[in-house]
Amino acid sequence: MKRFLAVILGSVLLLQGICTASVTVYAEESAEEESVGEESADEGSGEENAEENISGESEEEGAQEENTAAVEISAPSAILMEASTGTVIYEKDADTARPPASVTKVMTLLLIFDALENGTISLEDEVTTSEYAASMGGSQVFLEAGEVQTVDTLIKCISVASANDACVAMAEYICGNEEEFVRRMNERAAELGMNHTSFVNCNGLDADGHVTSARDIALMSRELITKYPQIHDYCMIWMEDITHTTEKGTSEFGLTNTNKLVRQYEYATGLKTGSTGEAKFCVSATAEKNGVELIAVIMAAENSKDRFGDAVKLLNYGFGKCQIYTDNDMEAIPPVKVEGGVEEEVGAEYAEQFTWLDITGANLNQMEKTVEMKEGIRAPLKKGDVIGQAVYTLDGTEKGRVDIIASGDVEKAGFIDCLLEAAEGLRL
Image (cartoon, rainbow, N blue to C red; front, top):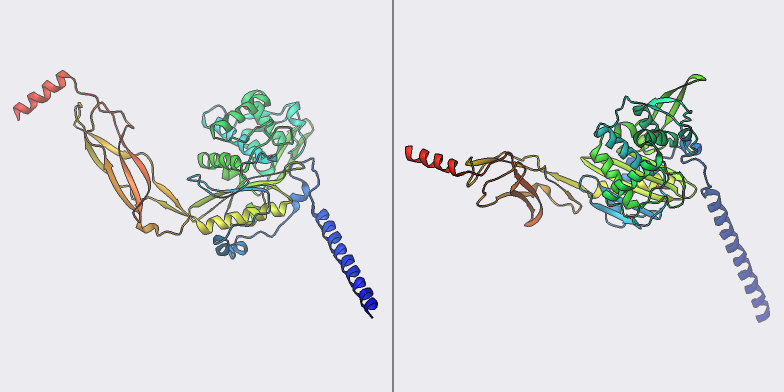
């Protein structure tokens, strides 16, 4: 009898092992089916046609639960930053250097808008495509050598269609060659404190040593959207046609935005996607709700759906936690007495508007402001010199300060000025 029971028990264990092995094999096969294959293009055509069901409302239903617990992000690197203050709300392995794919183009666009700002180029300028620019692989708008497009059109090609050829054409137009443009990209990155970044090209095609981090992407994204908010006019275009005019004639080419959040997430404002075999799937997603603007960066997601899903999860988490206090009642400050000057007083003004980010759920209506002016302000004074501060406190805790500055110059009184002042006093 014991031998019979042992045989039965052994058979059961054997069957259990076979079933377990079958389940494991099935899971591995399913994972392989969902894995990302290497793409020669930065944004593959399969992604352009994908319509993931990403909606702000459905994700927002779980936002309150996420506010009380850590956010579950599947991608290995991610960060969530509030744009106006640069406050980091969430991060996951944010400083590991990884290939960024076409998210590189955030820096390319930043340098383009810098050139527009300083007058080096204009939107109406015509750019001729070189043989080298036309030879770019990956995502492109198929510019031909000798083809002419305006700066405005090329910005659309970069922002909407992630066009590698348009990036190189603009790099050559601004700096003469891509190498010099890339040098400036790295220089600008250093200025922004992007300590884990090394750019090798201007479009993000896989190349040895071409890396950045989630935090660095957030930093350059913040610089772009806060300094040049007009970028949103470009990266929020869903579909638009451009016209190719070459020796072969004229033809229309349709641009379709690689960032599906533009269409599927109601608070989206941009910004840039990227995917290659080495980088996998990346995005710098910007969104705004109730005056709060957020930047969610996802790097090395396994597929496009996970990339956008993680981004939406972060954005909804941030909107559930963040509220911005802005001092909209920055009343005029009375003139301030100046000692030893040709004038007895100087005008005063705030250096900037005060804003403060709260992620604790505090009652911002209780924010208090006190003005503290320096004592014994003496000439000479230059416009912009700090002569006081506005101090903001909430529940007895200081939250920030804004400088109060002189609104004009006051020269130091000379000997003759003192005599004239004394004579004026005698007459009185």
